[in-house]
Image (tube, rainbow, N blue to C red):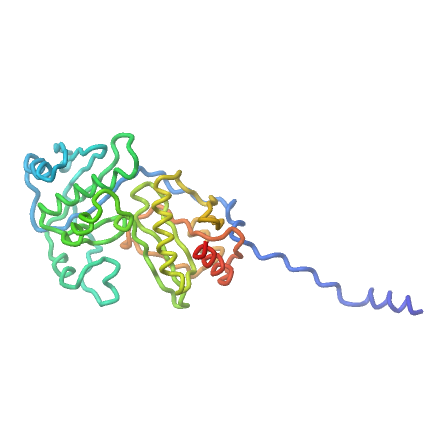
Length: 318
């Protein structure tokens, strides 16, 4: 009877609880198909906002020569072409940018890098030139910034204007631009790449690069980032950007080691739909981009703020 009772209890009791399926991790997104960004040639683009028209081709060539820059200037269908060592630039009249900052509250100055008085002056400009520079021979990507920046410098000087870097979204006064280039004229990652920081209502930070598209590379992002890791992750993004300019182009699902820490990359719209629906979207005025890849540890559970914070901590102490 004793054994029979046990059998009845076992038969009539509640079914044994089934173990929960493990939460999906970041690497579960690696094999998810995503539309690949169209392959684009490296091309550095500026808009010059000024008040004077450019002189003729001979005068342009003379100005380059005075700056000890070898340049051949000739006509193009809509403006002029400027051939520099390894780089071909076109300069054409264009329309007034819609993103010109007209007024700033104190907290709004950082996106463009202008004071309120400069913003008012730039809003009253009347002459605009589009500068587009591409590599025209098989030279390293790092040759593109120096020659394209030389062209932007000359055009801004002759137009008596400001420089708008269309890839990073920054607006530069000539004084700030010349000061930055005097410190490092050939290649300066902090001038080429901007790390944009956006804080959500929950207090988390999105850190996302702009400027990688100039080199035909995807931008990168970390989210969610807590206050104590913002500065460190900004520095990490600049280091990664510098490294990836000399590496094969990344795509969604790729992995790499950041120091000794394994990291993966996933297209931002996929990450937003599967992990964090509150991932902010940056407006077009914050710079040109073709694609953004979010960085995370492959084994971080999707949507786990604690897991992601642990991943960030590992990067900081690597």
